[in-house]
Image (cartoon, rainbow, N blue to C red):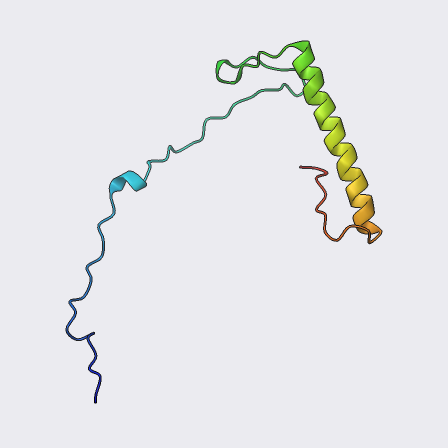
Length: 92
């Protein structure tokens, strides 16, 4: 009994047509947005307005401090061999 290849009987596939919707035209220069002055003062921008209360800002700050503290402790444990793998978040 022989097995014949069916590859010869098949028609070759045609390349699928890709729509031009996948390609987005890119502008020559990206639009730059300045949110801080060189002195660190906030610049108002209509697309990036922040309406947060003082309580919400304190909550965000608390979360940031907690995350940094957790990262420092985990990095120390990783360096002592107590924690298998930890990529420090410092600078991110």
